[in-house]
Image (cartoon, rainbow, N blue to C red; front, side, top):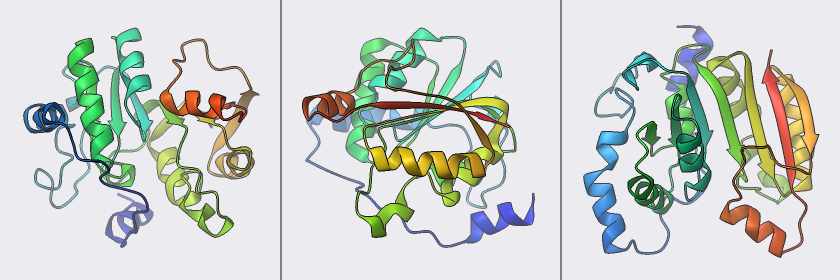
Length: 234
């Protein structure tokens, strides 16, 4: 393990954002109680891996299939859609917002998909214990915009997040970013290439396998243009 990786693990982090929202429905509490632990990637929780040793992601899914990552899956629409469309891959969804996790678990039950893992924490905690070059594709869909200038450092498209992401992605792996915030696009175009990615495309039209999420629908209702960026890990 590199010194930089060790430093990432040991440094004290701030988390900005909500962990909880409205009171969960009884069914959502049931999903969390009955389904969540079985869907966590093996060896990634603090209880299972208190010393934060690097894990072998081949153990997340029995057959060592290609591994995709969605950062901040919101209500889980895109995550479940992609899992159903690509049953041959394994997808990890990271989301510290408990209400979003509960929503996802309900969608997983309804869809019956079996190629998903759920990491209900800050994605940086997962980056800490993943080995280099293990992720084949990553998604960042409608992330928190942190619109105030003094909060831009909290955005995902900053070195604090992008450098660990680049480390765990394979050379040639695709990183997709969807947002309705023009200034987020500006920052992504500035910061993502510096972290080790090349811009492949920038469009107002989504990817062919995209599913519209509630966040995108809100942006459309409020008249904000959508932006779909594709990067590739060098």
